[in-house]
Amino acid sequence: MVDILGGIIKALQMILSGDPVLYGILYRSLFFSGIAVILATLWGTPIAMLLGLKDFRGKTLVKTFFNSLIGVPTVVLGLVLFLIFSKGGPLGSLGLLYTPGAIILGEAILVTPILVSIATTAIEAVDPEIMNLSKTLGASESQASLAVLKEAVNGVLLSNIASFNRAIAELGVALLVGGNIAGLTDVLTTAISRYTARGDLDLAIALGIMLMVFVFGINMIVIAARKAKFLLTLGRSPQ
Amino acid sequence: MNGDAQRVFEMQIWQKLLIAAVLATVVVVAGTLVYFNYFAKRRLLISTTTSLYDTGLLDELETDYEATHNVDINIISAGTGIAIQHAENGDADVILVHAPSVEKTFLEEGYGVNRKIIAYNFFTIVGPSDDPAEIEGKTAKDALKTIFAYGESLADQSGQTKIWVSRGDKSGTHTKEQSLWKAAGYNYTLVSAEPWYADAGSGMGDTLNIADQKSAYTLSDIGTYLKFSKDGTISLVAHISQEESLLNVYSAMAVNRTVPANQTLHEQINYADAVDFIKYLVSDETQQFIENYGKTTYGQSLFYPAVQPLKDDAPQPVVGWIKTAAFFEGSECPPQYRSDYPELYS
Image (cartoon, rainbow over the protein chains, first blue to last red):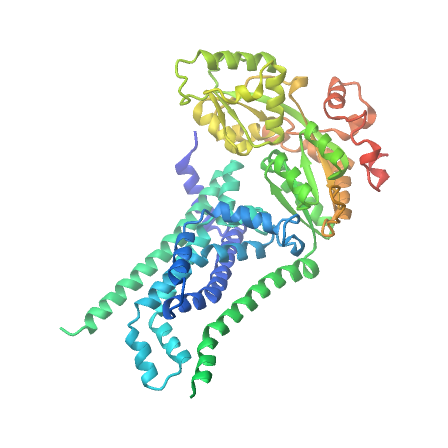
């Protein structure tokens, strides 16, 4: 029988004592997911701006494409990337398989659809008058786009946070292209699976607690931020 | 501002961002490559069967080896099936496996070279302590027959009640299970389709957990079983004692840099360090370490060293068993599958 309570107590002790293995894994999780979100933001925001501000043929199709990719199972993406990065595969000569770079790229690709979708919605929600107004005031098309982006900054931020949550909580990509190598490519999720398989349940519980704390913490910050903004708008709105 | 100039501006904002994105991607890729090629220690990628890893033995060997070598050992633990796949793709430098029949094909196809038998232990059939199928003390063959009969006699044939859990992951243990069913006179494909037969598709630890939850029997390597049993994670009991058919032989192989199918060269394979690590595994000190590993914790060795007994051609029956089970053409590695480093076989 598994001693759950004892496991949780031991896990908390490990977390509090600053166990270097635990914190190494946490650090890698935060680092890989963070860089992945930055990458995805860099290539996702321009796409979202195109989708949100411009009209072109096939726009709905592109939007549907990104929307439906949000739910792509992480193991499937992991498998595809494994086949691509494996030395027998098309990008095998880069030698990226089982390196942190492979996880970062994989997670960036994984979160791109969610980032693009949320950011596009945010940009579309901005009053089109802002675009027109800035142009009337002498702004170039480019400056006007920036003005819209500034108005949508909360939505873009939300898309980053949602992406970060998806990246830090996913298992498939990190496991298949990272290889779960201790001290190099193991992250919270893959390490939980390893320590459960090895019977080191205390460690697995400790990592699970850390992951939950981060995911919940981030969500709570988002909710709090939204509430604060809501109150702010209430206060500003004319009675 | 005329229309053309405006159009140019219009493109710029997202173009700039896209260029930044491309640059950032290049930085990540290049950074990884530069780091691994110039700054990191030489990398030795080992793809291993789960039992050597899950028992913690490889962790200890890794620490010991890295202390004296300028090499960073990276271990991927996913089972013999994937280890062989890794070697065929050139995704690992060394593989540690325990499925002689698969290894033989593998050497013949030319994907691996310089095989060395490093250790052995025994599989065991574990099950609930009350032993509902009554296999205690039987030979493995009879135990499987008894389990099969017990499975057929169950009132519930809906597939809800499972009494046998298989790794089902093409691992060395899974390969052994298949050969045991065959030796007991069953067609494995038919057995695996029985309603009382569960296919876990995961590592030894997960499979033991599943068998424990379902009060079912399973085939386990002794090392992983002892670790889980000692930690109190599972309450399964080993019912079958050591015998020839349950022998479990571990060997190491270096991955061949040349892909035999199309003669391409995997330049990134770290062959020199791979062979050096195999030499380290078969050295007297490491063999001694393997023998002592876990003795104080579990009261018995998890793995027995194989190098010296084989070299001495010792009289114990187990030496003969190893030769029968894991020698090809009378050798652990016939000369045509050796490459350089003759000292490995002196």
